[in-house]
Length: 126
Image (cartoon, rainbow, N blue to C red):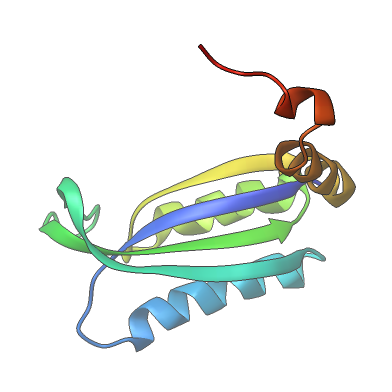
């Protein structure tokens, strides 16, 4: 199963349970379809770069809750998750990035980025 990262911007509510429920429903949707949720990370509440409109209420939002979800899942489950996110009025924007076909590929790429060869250390920029 491919490894994906979903980045989501949700409408900000004074109560925390709205965002918690959105994250729980997303993770449960993936796990019920046989996928694996590897990491859920909150980036916190931030001012939006531009005002964003909620689909159903036509109200503009200026503050949003940012969060990410790393998961292994099938493309069919990803399509159904996109449909779920599209219908949810709490979601302002989201995107899904494919990190790799297998976890081993992603781990191998990370090692290449962090380790330098001895020859590369001898190169001097002028």
